[in-house]
Image 1: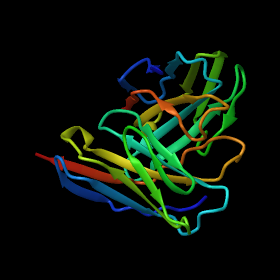
Image 2: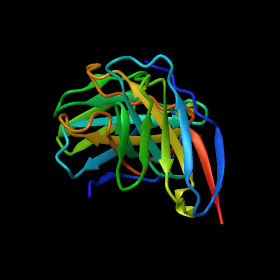
Image 3: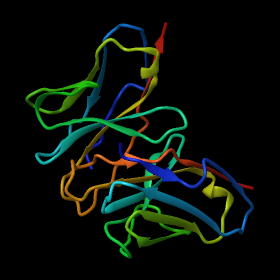
Length: 114
Length: 112
């Protein structure tokens, strides 16, 4: 079974803190994605990566950065957390040549910024 | 991006067949139709994908009429564990990257 794991299920941080969210997949997938999910807004893509050290901005990259130093690991960084970044963060991955739009999601990290 | 419309919620009972219809009037020639399922406090899970006619797997069936302006996800004999939100996605192939665009989905509640 494909496994995508995220470092924390729940996280509470203070405004201005630097926050790291880690995602690891064990299926040798080339593509990895970070989304956030908010009620009424659906899923929105923050960043994605199609290879080690490669990254592309999604729809809402402002206030975030990412790092992909190893193929299996994709990190999302909130440089200075703000209350409007309180959300559910979902990591996903898939093969470049797999079924289009079949992405494997992790369990999510519910981040609260106070 | 093709816009999709689905019912906000549906109710069913265990053992019944559930059909969730998605409308996508502006679907393009290259678009595939993809359905995801999401349980509370979990990430979405891919269920099924199709282009035309009928696709069936171990979880569900997907019916797509000839004009492709709508599609129907069919869940046979649902159980309580099928209570979830179901998302219909329609997007262009080869957009440069595989961005999933989820709407608000259909919240299915299965009762005993």
